[in-house]
Length: 146
Image (tube, rainbow, N blue to C red; front, side, top):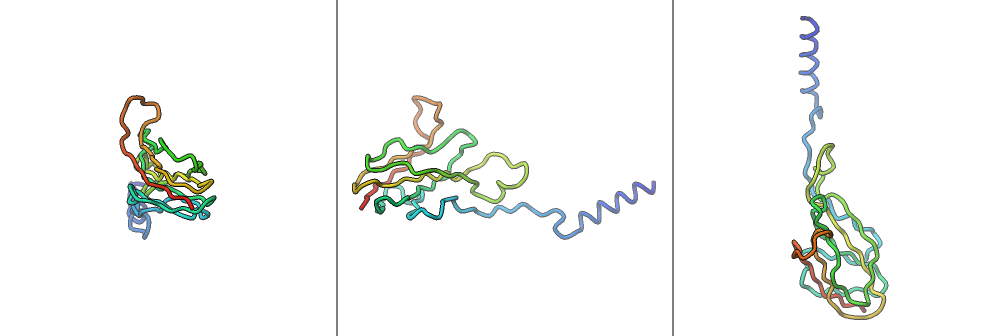
């Protein structure tokens, strides 16, 4: 009987302790874009013209659902562009909680212009193993390298 009372008291004290049961936060997390990237292109800029310096790395920051198999990948890009890396990461601090699964994630695709030019960069979100299926989403910007 005494053990039960002590156990109940310990549980009550632990529950009342400040920070004992911290509520998970859901703060937004910025895209994991490297610091050496000169221009960050966001989803809101779809359809716009983006001017980029030659030989400078720029990033397209998109939110995807890679946990469901949907990933962003270039489907058409001008010959003067080259891929220059990629990065991924959570979009909210809640995703960093133990046991959290799924959810949206940042997908950052980086490019570099090798020479002057102007052309459209098309990026599609789809499951790579599916063929004959329309993309879940499409992103396009006109890149002007000078």
